[in-house]
Length: 291
Ligand code: HEC
Image 1 (cartoon, rainbow, N blue to C red):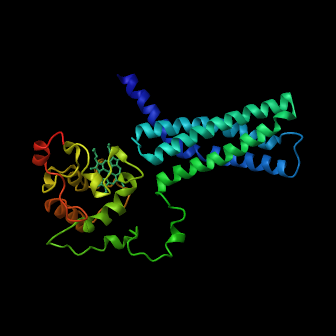
Image 2: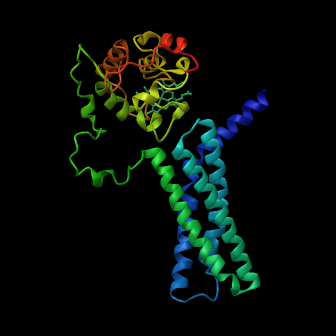
Image 3: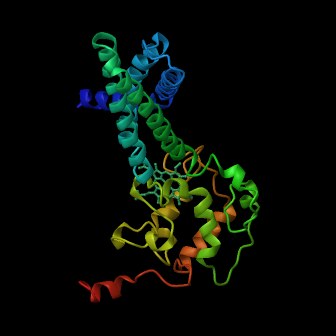
């Protein structure tokens, strides 16, 4: 038992080395690819560059470690979702390409220049693939579209949920007819990056509304009309120091008291949807089971 626990602890530790390791294959493979491609373009094709070869060999080794660590990280941090899978499989493709490029480099050196094309081509592909995979990884951490966001911010669309602290400027609490539009921006700003269409931590997706109320009713994290039995309500009202508080402390902006009250009132009001519709009713479901 103890040995098992220790092994799991070690794997989790390896997983957390992922952010440290990942810079190496990115820099080394891209540098090697640029160098060899540049030499190819200017006609220096006789011998493989020693610098590029060194970068490729170390880049490939570091790529093995990075993929392993990333795999453990996804396991131990229960990372799931479409972006994670894109990141995972483009990283594995990068590793395969880097290994093949290393083999082609060996063949080029020991068998002759007929392997030059394979070496440079595979190297270029692994450089491109590591950039693609790195991009998906960055989107997982920083959120989809993060890089270009500042450029798009020039477009004044009031619909765009903003991450600015303005959301914490207590929104007016509406006592009457609280709707999805009141709470949707809160979920979008504080929860969506982990529980949205792109990424579902703990397998949970909160937006759009229809997804929150899909699947087995027993698995819903909101019990319409009853905050006290809603897991979502329990987790957002935990103290900030609690391990299970949502959003996790330090990983996203915490909810203000006013925002928690809005969500509580929305659940009490029956958790209505964007058109004021109500979530499916348990009784109706039981009667029409099989429908
Ligand atoms: C930085 C990522 C992140 C953010 C942001 C985030 N969560 Fe989570 N959430 C998680 C993780 C990770 C788990 C799983 C925790 C565990 O298993 O210990 C989780 C679990 C949950 C669960 C329990 C799901 C279940 O079935 O066990 C609920 C409910 C939840 N989150 C609601 C929210 C709400 C509401 C917000 C926004 C106010 C939010 N989360 C923001 C990462 C996040």
